[in-house]
Image (cartoon, rainbow, N blue to C red; front, side, top):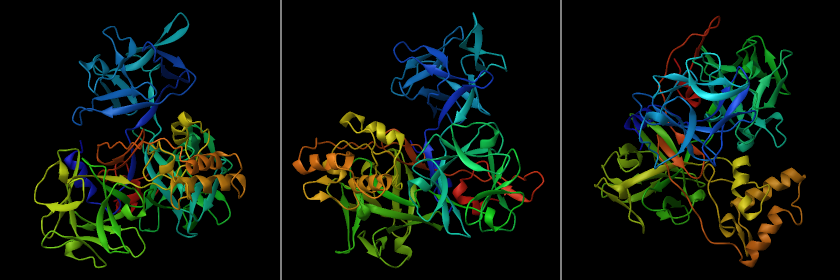
Length: 535
C-alpha cells in the first residue's frame, strides 16, 4: 500500500521524481570479488563470478526489516537455525518466521534471526560457503543497481548527456531514453553515487586520472563514484564531482572534460525522466482519464495514448493541477455541480488534492468543491464517496528506449532485438496488433512506430527487409496477432507499475550537509530532480 507520509512528502516539492522500485542490487563479497547466487531447482546458494540481481522488499518501516528476493527465481534469501544460507519460496509476500528477514545498514546485510550477524562466507575445504558470520572481512555488501531516473542537461548548451546505441557518451538535444540516466546511492553511508545509463543498464559513467570521461560495463571501483552537490549562491545547476580525484564533470561544447573548479561548463540541470507526465488510471477498472481536444471533452478510455497523458504540476499548499499533454492542452477542472471540464485557466476549479486511499492508491479530490474523481467502468463521474471506485494510480510515462529487459519479454514470440516505445516503464505487451502493426500499416505514435524509428537509426536510415519490424508488420497485416494485453498495477509510494520494473514517484526529506573544502550543499534523501530546494 501507499504510505500516507509518501503522499504528504510528495506534495511539498515542485518536481515529482521517478524512482525505480523495488530497489535491486548485487550481493558482492568484495574481498574475494565473488557474488551470491541461487540455484532455483533446490534453493541452495553459492558463490559465483557472475552478478545476479536481488530485490529488496521493505517489510517494516520502523524496524527496517526487509525480504531479499532473487529476481530470476523469486525465491527469498534465508538463514536456517545453524546460520546456513539458502532460499525459500515466497508465499504471498510473507514468511512464517524471521529466517528470511534482514536488515541493511550502510550496505551490509545482517540477519534478523541471528541477532544481526552479517551475511558472510566461511572457508570450507578451500571453497567459500555463504553463511551468517560475525566476521567483518568475508561479508557481503549491497551494490545497488536501481535509483532515480533523470536527465542531465547543460544549461549553457541546451544539450543532455546521452549514452548512444553503442554505449558511447555524447551530448544530445533530445529527451529520449538514450538521455535518461539513473543516480544510484552507493549505500555505504557516504554521499557517493554512481551514474548509469537507463537504456544500457550495465554502462557506468567513469573517468580516468587523465580526465577522460567514458562508460564501463558494471564498474564499481572508485573511478565510478561521484558526489552531486549544489554550489551555494548558484541556481543554474549542480556540480558532479569525482569522489576520487575531486575534479568536476564538464562539457565545453565539444567534449566531456574534467575541471579542477566549478564554472558554467560544469553545471548540470537534473530533471525527472518522466517529465512530470502520467496516466491517471483507475485501480478497479483498466481505464484512464483522457481529453479529446477536437470535442473539448473529458472522457474515460482503456487506451494509453497522448490523449490520456497528463502533466502534473505542484501548485503549492499541497495542491496539484492536471494539464492535458495534447496540443493546446487544457487543465482538468471540476465545477460546483461536480461536472468535469477542461479549461485554459489555472483557477481554483483546476486545483486538486491527493489523499491516501486504503485501496492501494490515491483519491483525487477537487480542492474547491470536495468532489472525488470516480470511475464506474463505463465512464467518468464525481462522487463524495471514498471507495475503490474513487481510487487511482499515477503511471509515469517514460521516454522511448530499448533495453535488455524489454528484449527478454519478446523472446517468447521469437524477437531477439526490439525497440519499444513505452507508455510506462517495462509494459507487458502480448499482442502484435496492439503494438501498432495493423492491416492499414504502422500506427503513428505506436510501439511499432518507435520500433521502426529505432531500427532505422541503428541501420543508418532504413528498415531492413526480413527484419523485426518488417516481419511483425507482415503478421499484423495478415491479422495473425494473438489476442491479449496485460497490465499490472503495483503500490509503494505514489506508483505507476507494470511488468517487472516499476517507476515510482516518491519524495524524501532534505538534509543539509557541507562538502569538505567547498561551499556547497548536497543531498542524501531529497530527490535529485529537486536540487533547487536543497539547503
